[in-house]
Length: 160
Image 1 (cartoon, rainbow, N blue to C red):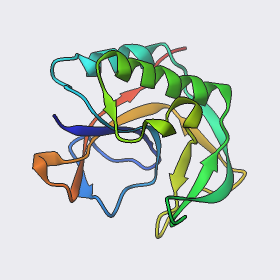
Image 2: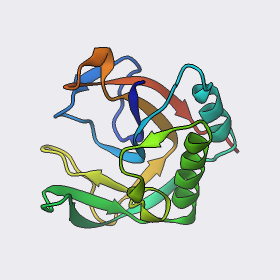
Image 3: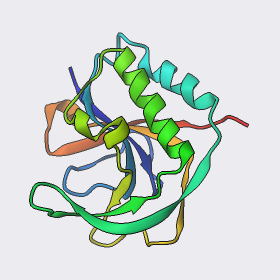
Image 4: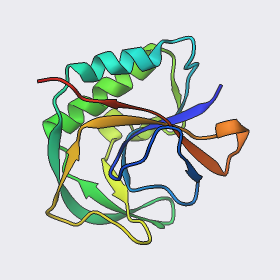
């Protein structure tokens, strides 16, 4: 089974776009790395149904922090408002209901800290706002190539 991640891309990229694993676009991870039988779970349809009842929302950007065992990953935290917590928890519940297995479950639900990794030439700035309005499904090993990533689908929040 393939490995996937669900993100809010913060820059426009088309479905089918591939990029190097070392050069991610600016994004907020909503569900970190997981394995699931995508084809046999109707997961795309289930995610679409989940987001059809959601309205886009904004959250503000908080402080910088460093993640990782050696504090080597520079990130900017997002303020965890109720909409963001609810969206994350509902996505994780849906993924668990179809048998998803997560690489690092300790960073889900109560352990979830929404953030955007600071990129070489772009970042989020404290005090600004970011809109959460869609979910992008990323294939972490397109064509069994661990050095690449591929945008599979983007599902927009359409709730009113």
